[in-house]
Length: 341
Image (cartoon, rainbow, N blue to C red; front, side, top):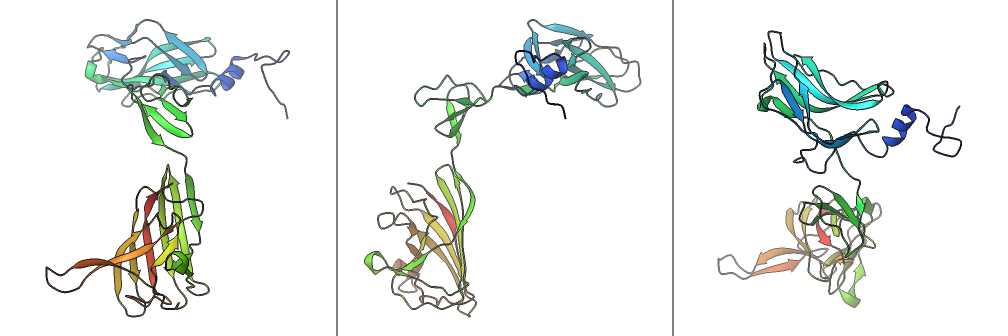
């Protein structure tokens, strides 16, 4: 098996194909433009026998192209009886040793692009439709088909960002931003891929906290993902046993190493379904960061002290045996999100 590497003293890039294979890793095929509104190499028509390619730069199969002024391309007459669909292309021709803008006639559909790695390689700039018996392209019949290519993601030092460039990506302190031409807009931050853990369940608070044993072989699943500084969390419990009737509120641990912020209480939805003929209910799970930043501290449901519209409303903690005796085959589901410390 032959090996090749370059450029070194005594081992140069000697052929166009070697250059193409090397240079195409620097930039993708396309017109150099960060914004679709850019006119770089854009094709326009005005109902005449030519179309116009604007100035601009591009990469084509690893070769650089620069048009420093407008270029007019002749439109061949359509002598057929139906509309003809053509292309304007950038053509890199390794036999001719050049990249040029060319008008490429088609037929009932646009002609296929020629893309031979060591020969002719084309990328589209526009699609033009010529009506039967005509040799002109109207403005409406010249449709933009440019591939666009821009810079890679720019690194940035905090406090020293460059001016915003529209549609340019920037990364700073592992956060990703996009430019809109006026400023840098946050897109995403470092997170954690979809992950699993085994939640720990407790009853009570402070020094009165005890661990809840739901029975050997219980389904006890925590499923989470971190997006930026937000944690999306789902917990599902199906006991195999019946724990004691603890008089403290049920709590359940958050994913390890991902404590909640002290700034506010996050809320979760919980749903309970009894498989022991005790009905079902939904309620709200609450974080009490002042007590613990590492667990959901309460599962609460709304209740009143009467049946009239003036009856007082209160939220009540769900316990292991109240208002349901949570035991084997019951299902408790918790879903929501919270912000990291």
